[in-house]
Structures are given as C-alpha cells and as structure tokens.
Image 1 (cartoon, rainbow, N blue to C red):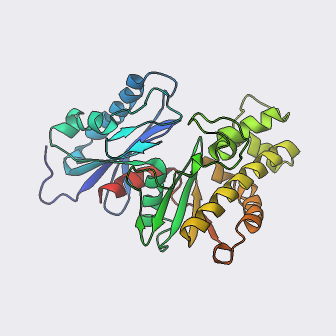
Image 2 (image 1 turned 45 degrees about the horizontal axis):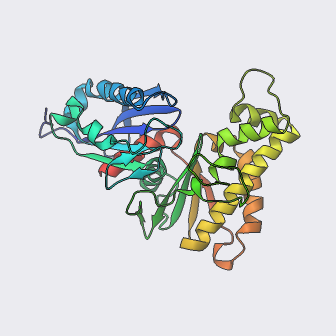
Length: 314
C-alpha cells in the first residue's frame, strides 16, 4: 500500500516503556491521531512483549490513513544499540539484545510497503520531541529527562539531538551518584535511576516507614501524602531531587548546557520535585558557567515519546 500523491505524509510512532506501549499516527506538525496504549507485560517473555507491539501496529495499520505513512519511528526504554537495531531495556528482562528493528520491519503492514524503521532510546526520543515542539525548541544545548518508572535522558548539542554512536548518549539514569549505593539491575551500583525514579521514591518511602492509606503504593501515592506534609514522603522526594541535581550538575559541567527539561510521571508532582531540585542544584551546580541553569517542565506530557519517535523519521 502506497500513499497517494496528494496525501500529506504521516509517521507511525511507537513508544515502549516498562509500564506501557503506546502508538499513534503523527503528522508533520506533531499532531497525534489513532492513539492506542496497552500495558507492557514487562515480567513475561520477550515474545509476549513483542506481541503487544504487534497489537499496537495492527491498530495503527487498520486506520485508513495508514496509506500515507512513510516511516515507522520507535522510542524504547534502553539501552539500545543503533548499529544492531536491538534493545535491552533494564526494566523488560525478556528483551536482551532483542532485534526490535528487524521484528517491527517484518510486521506485514510495515514489510509490504517496505517502510523504513527508525529507533532511539526513550530519552533521546523525548529530547527530539521537546526540541521539535516543546520546552527545548529554542535551546541549542539542552538536557531532556524522563523521570518515571526509570530515568532516561537525551542531549541536544549545537542545535541538534545527539544520540551518540550506540544511541545511548545522555543515558543519565545509569550514572553513579552514590558511590556506596545499592546494586542496580544494569550491573552497576548507586545509579541515579535507583534513587530518583518513581519506583525508587516509593520503595524508599516504604523502607522508611511510610504506609499508604489505600492499596496504592506508587510514587503518586507518596506525592499525595507529601502534599499533606508527611515527613517520610517529603524526604523521599527530597532525596530523589538531590540525586537528580547531582546528575544534572555533572552533565552541565561536562557539556555546557543552556537548559534542562524534565518530564515523566514524577515531574507531575510539580513543586514537590522542582522546589528541592532548585535548592540542591544551587549547591551542586557551583561553577560559574553552570550556575542558574534554566530548568523547565516538559511541555508535551505523555505524548513526548510518540512525538519524539515521529521526529526520528523527519
């Protein structure tokens, strides 16, 4: 199936994370249509996870507009390997060196017209989205973070998104911010993700004695109690903000940033995260050229991964 000469080109976008797998058709302005979101069977086999990706593609391919699709973009939890077209998400253990590009390219709706498939880590996809349509659109040098189930990030340098040779440049979630910290599933220890992710915030609060009033033990529930002044819940967000500040300041010192953009589910906590983050950044970002970093909330919300996946195709 090929696009008609008069049809405006569209991109098929897929956003893969440890919690959900989403898809949409995206136009040249970044507008989404035919969006679908399914739960990631993260603890099941790699085949089961791929089946959900195929269900997303089936949904998109059923849209009449599929005929105008010119490429498929994928933003995936990482790390990724652009050279091999594989992914090894830390929070999807069934995928290790998984040939995602090959598998998506083999889907009938993709294979029949021979659509190209572009891959990036979810942090890079988010950076591409925010640089194209969001809070980093007028910044030449920016760090864009996704703080959610995990912590991902992407870099905009000299006006362009820079994924690096392997596709993992800016993978901030797995830099060490605690030299004697807990082991991380990635194989290192004391990783930023193990302190600042939503999962880590809830885990730390529970370990320090916080108990939710209901059955929800997520970072969202911790945030609700923090807003009510619960000291353990507040301390858990403060610790996450401190770890983020250390990672951001180190990155700014290394590559000389204009702006930091933070999105993801944890960022929806607003001042609970951003107020202590500003306080800790004032302490860690001490060199003159990184003081007063311009830190902003991401503008594209949960659409960032899909818009970024489409931006890869542009």
